[in-house]
Length: 132
Image (cartoon, rainbow, N blue to C red; front, side, top):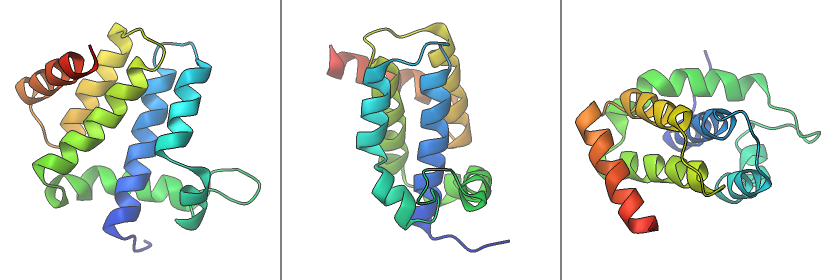
C-alpha cells in the first residue's frame, strides 16, 4: 500500500465526497462543476498524482480516498472537519437547491469524518444560516 501525506488524504477524500455530493441529485449543474474545480483544482489533483495529464483519475486517487476514510477521522481536528463539510455543503448549494439525496450524502460524509448525527445537523444549520 502506498504512503500518502495527510494533505493528499484530505484532498482525495474531499474530492471523492464532493463527487458524491454533486452527483447525488441526478442532475449535474454547471455551477456545481465550476465550484468543484475551484475547490479542487486540476493542477492540485495532478500534483498529488490523482489525475493524469490526460485528465483521468489515477489508481492512486482511489487508493488514497479509500485509505482516507479510515485514517483521516483521527488525524483531523474539529475545524478541519468543519471546513470539509462546509465545502461539501457549498457544492450541494451551488445549484441553489438542497435535496434530500444531498442531505443523505452529507450525513454519511459526516459519519466518515467521525461526527455524530447531532454534530452534522448543527453544522448544516450553521452553514445554512451563513449562506442565507
